[in-house]
View 1 (cartoon, helix red, strand yellow):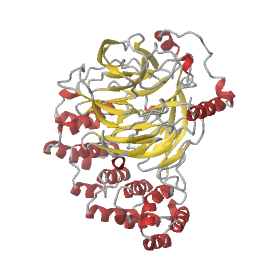
View 2 (tube, rainbow, N blue to C red; view 1 turned 60 degrees about the vertical axis):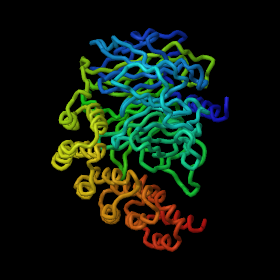
View 3 (cartoon, helix red, strand yellow; view 1 turned 90 degrees about the vertical axis):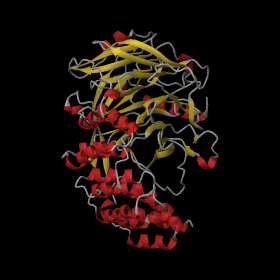
View 4 (tube, rainbow, N blue to C red; view 1 turned 180 degrees about the vertical axis):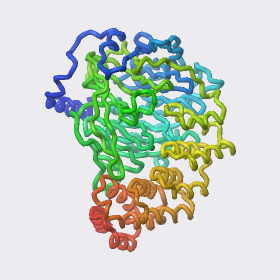
Amino acid sequence: MNKSLLLFLATASSALAASPLEDRDRPVAQTQALPAAEAARQMKLPAGFSVQVVAAEPEVVQPVAYAMDDRGRLWVVENTNSPSGPGEPKDRILIFEDFDAAGKARKRTVFYDKLTFATGIAVGHGGVWVGAPPNLLFFPRKDDADTFTGQPEKVLDGWGNEDTHETLNDFTWGPDGWLYGTQGIFTNSNVGKPGAPDSERVKLNGSVWRWHPVKKKFELYAEGASNQWGVDWDDRGQAFFEACVIPHMWQCIQGARYTRQAGQHWNKFTYEDIKTIANFEYEKRAYCGAMIYLGGQWPKEFRDAFFFNDIHMNKLRCEQLTRDGSGMRAEKKMDFMVSPDAWYRGLSPQYGPDGSVFVNDWYDKVPCHQQREFTDRTNGRIYKIVYDGVKPVSVDLQKASDAELVQMQLNENDWYVRHARRILAERGPKPEVNAALAKMLRENPDETRKLRALWALHGTQGLTETLALETLKSPMEYVRAWTIQLVCEDGAPSAAELAEFATMARDDASPVVRLYLASAAQRIAVAQRWPILTGLASHAEDAKDHNLPLMLWYAAEPAVGADIAKAAELLAGCKIPKVQEFITRRMAAQ
């Protein structure tokens, strides 16, 4: 066992030993697995909720990840080669569909059965994307075929697997059209296209990363933390992830650098990193999954709440997110689901087309994969958490017209919004689609619906410079903020957009907008950053914000290192003490 795994296990065990109050709520140790139906029956949930069994062993074993397609079908990746890593080519991608009133899948199809080790899956843009270190694989689908007999394409390689629990995982399509994933701190990757030299690769360990399926571009989105497994977005496009062993809750900000469980940041001039957004701590344990509930069917108190699994405590945790300056804070809401079954190992919650939530259960006697002698590779379940007797729905969004997909951007259930947005992007730019989305962006009074139109326009290449300059003046701060991020996706905003950024950096009253400007400035050529940096540094009110001083510094550091004279000017006008200190230190390090 390597040193990093010993450190993780020792830390987790120490934390558990020091948590007597939570341990009183721990399921009683058991030596035998429970039948899936009995395990589901025993789960404790709020009033009105119940659990259905979608699939269980032997139909599925070790379901490490899953995704939903545009028909609401589940694409499940099995991983029986864990924890040793790549092994025999025997693991499968399964498709479950045709759910009855009790939630059970009546049809199961084997799409592929030669994976060696996989931890993430997504469906879209012409096929199936699977993370299987050292590769990101793509399985093209012809005519929606549900079996695959050829060899998948190796889209990216260089993913490490030193810690097999911390490699690329839990794929999610972001609102901007990129495929997002996470990776843990004790695995080192050097990612690029097959055959690419080091100069064209991206080094990462603890991180949130993303891949663009059309532009064929890979990026490190944010770095640090520990072993994060999943990322999701709220109704205003704010992203969050959980992490293990260190404080558990983090807001995912483009270009951010977070407190690390181990190791050093890639940039030695980082000086300080961004801290957890939680205003409390659980014991430092293993957590998994990330879901902001936007399914539209559960009681309103759960909308925009964050859900994740506590692997050691056999719980589905729920936290409330509240605004705090430029970002958010996490507050403990409730333990949404508690399983008396000590073998329950819930991983990733996701809501589907009827608003209910699926959870894949790794199901194992022990919570940590380092304890290899006890692992059982014959188990696995998929559950569905339903509210108030909801019935499954039959959908096939690929059959929807463009106009219907545009209207789905207003659906209360974000499952339809996300899938429709991706399909519109796949169908390519169309004048009538862009006109309808632009009308929604301009006229809908709800900020969340304006954002949905904005994201969809970006995907269909309809966010023109003229429209972007218009939305940069929107009275709604998250619309202005997201326009900044989308305009800077390729790092080349127009002269007019740069001029507007400089004005906003100086005059915009929203700390959220200033945060997005600090993120965007990291993507802009160093020589073009100065007006934005100068404007952001003039806001004394940002001195105690939990994000802005550090995000401003991450954008300013390369500029300070490149031009001492302009750095001195920036220092003279800076009203944020922490940034003043860092500028001075960086100038002295020349």
